[in-house]
Length: 320
Length: 287
Image 1 (cartoon, rainbow over the protein chains, first blue to last red):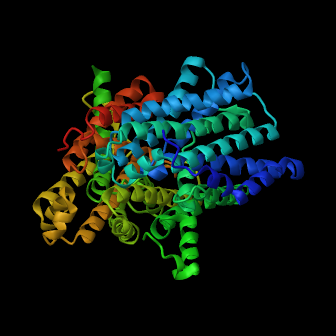
Image 2 (image 1 turned 45 degrees about the vertical axis):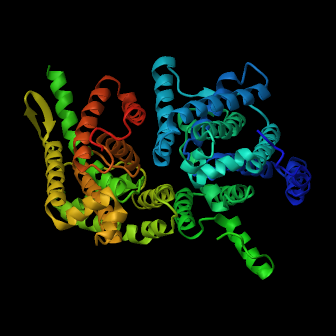
Image 3 (image 1 turned 180 degrees about the vertical axis):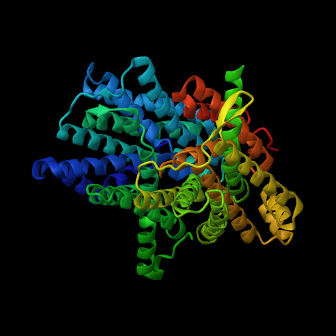
């Protein structure tokens, strides 16, 4: 990998406001109530999921619906190893296990057309849920597992750490030659292959890297549930939500998925707490359809376009 | 031997329903290129519409005449409003396929939650033609046989429509190559919307037929969508006879697995699907 194309000085200066926001969020347990910490925990969880979803699916255009599978693998890693070793190792195991699973799945399916890949990854979640459920009932004779407890602050800070690593990795991938290879696969896979990119290899590795963060996030969140079963761990909504959040926020910028994640987790928090759960799902679906038809570049794309228009002719848009 | 016959005939009976559901998805996915994950939700709506109508005294089999055309209209309008605009905005077919898949997920959430808001989450059922008759020593209820027969008749009638009419010919041309078909004077937006409408109508009618022999709930849809996806892949994309035969094949496999290990029926569908994707993604009748 060649990182010489990254302007490190600019990369360090540019994110001034986001870093300030990050520090404000990081200090939340000091000034906020327990509710604020829990709310922010969910914000960060969905940010991690949607940013890591975008690392692979946003640039290549292959829609992955396997996020829930990797997240669930992380949850089960925490259930199985949580009592035997320190928390940080459990998180690493969750990440590594997801990496391996994604590598195998990617190696098998990423030669296929995009639509088969989407169906396969969707099937993977249900398959894992059914098989683990069957395994627990008939072989182990139990249903679900207990997970060792961690305090809300611990969960919050570990998740925040994972989020920062995710953002840095997403940034490096986007700005490096490797990210350029990914983008060219997204635009025209055949042409990318002809320029000497090992298309399948790049896709498989990126898919596996994006899965690491989902698995790690799952391992952290498992301790919040304290008791898990396949239905909780492999919930297909955890596949759809990151995809919608990223599309709604816009995948053209690294902050798009973050904006989408905050918007939807707040909407979810607002509507799901009452008896309005089904209305949340209904609105979720309606926004998904409307976004795809009217806002293909998402909220951040819309803002960028407006900004360009306001600044007028001084810098004409180079594209579109 | 008797067990074997029981599994085999049971598989054929449920296979008839699977065939009808899958032919609908085959039209939507194979021709209109929308992997409609909301397919099963149209089935759920059809099933509940029949439940509703039979409560006010209409014969459940007669409701097919109402459910079919209404669902056709819904599907037709849905394609014209949502998917046509996605198709016209997409730079290439790959983008259209993935965007329409995501839009279909949106429709899935919308339709399912409207269903839950109206009918709740508890299962419903009613009895119709509930007497058992013996077929070669194995016992089946009359309603299952009637439902399977209806499904097969509709399937064959649709196949004849495809092979013998001008519109059918246009659909087959659009399935092979939409842009060339457009150049040959086929009104492609209309034909694709027609396919989507027929697909929705088949799902709705299949739902009506399912409701006369099994209990129904608002969460029943996704299971049938999954079965239809596996069958369409098994039969070959865009191949209507392939989906028809594939439905029976999967019905028999499902019937056998649920006899030995009921907990693994859904898992077995995915295993078949995974093997197919790895070995022969074109399906048994695909070209």
